[in-house]
Length: 523
Figure 1 (tube, rainbow, N blue to C red):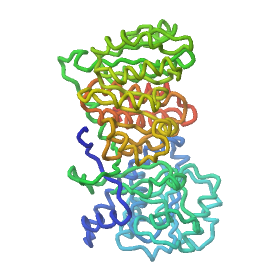
Figure 2: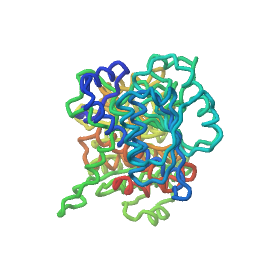
Figure 3: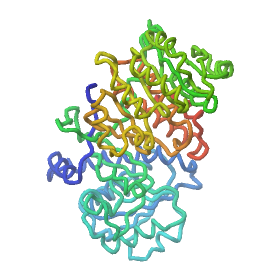
């Protein structure tokens, strides 16, 4: 398999506490330096996410409500607020101390005094159990700094009242949790006896947290962010299989300058066979994404009569009509011609929008058994019969990348849970990209979790764009199929974030997503 990606592991609460203790111990200087880095990075990321809101003005600044406990989680929240102010974002904040200002631990008090010394526009009050301090006003943002990693249940009554007031408030645009939504840890994960802060974004600080991936708490955690503050180095990977976070720096190599004397043949030749009479747009989105991946050549084989229209939209691809069957999909009659073409391919993509006629399935299975190049199979291609055909590939042929969503995964691996995906990959030397709100990439040993991306992706065509990106990147570096899959997933997610900020989650289309692939690399 490919060399594992350098990334950071998700840890349990106990593992994370032990890791922090080993790094920081009781050294207050180290602890405050870590708090300062966390606050600055959370503030930087929150400033980006606030672009989903209206642009604040001096006359109408953002109204921010901070819920603050005694400990370092509150210090992180306060220093994140200071970073927003440092970035000259017009704001006004109300800080509510759940247990009183006098209860602040020394490092948290230091963070509070930094905010005051920086003249952050704020007012503060001790929470007296009266939720009017929350409910009587509209808030643009609520930042949860009540509890973090050290929280142990039960929730104090003051925190219960604050969390319930915020969770039921009808006019808070964005709710942000620092490290953990207060009330949640791995002991209380499945309990429902006390409220949990319902975050739109959770900003993990220092260490990715395993608890936050649990599907039963997705509605409380919201979208995950990771504030990397240097707790891990390049040698972090252990021998045992891990779940790891896929990080945006994967995209740095894609944004790097190319050699001045390069040639189109240096960047691979990607072949794409997809679409059908009823789902032709899938093919166009595959091709658009592959072209923007940087592939040197993209050959587009399109069943039906769409080539003239598609060529007018994307003249940079090498367009040709592929024989269609009576159902409007790709016909097995063209299989030998296609196999001859694939001798020149450095990657081949099939499946998106192809339909599931028996004739098309027969074609895909033949390609899976005999094609000499790396293969990417998406959507309609993903059947148990295709998996069997992949298993018949000669041992010396390149591997495959499979890109199922949850329903397609159940089709190709019936009765098995996601944890068996690595076993499936090992059975025929593949990488599997399991598409979901938090897409996971399996390489036969480790599981890589992507936390980039927006609900703007929850619409038809999203997977077609991703498949085209994966195939285009694989064509450029056919030996690095794990990296191609992971980089495409992250790039796809970051582009969706750019699209939602330029438009909105509701209105951003997949055409706009393709248009923001370049913006994502510049970010």
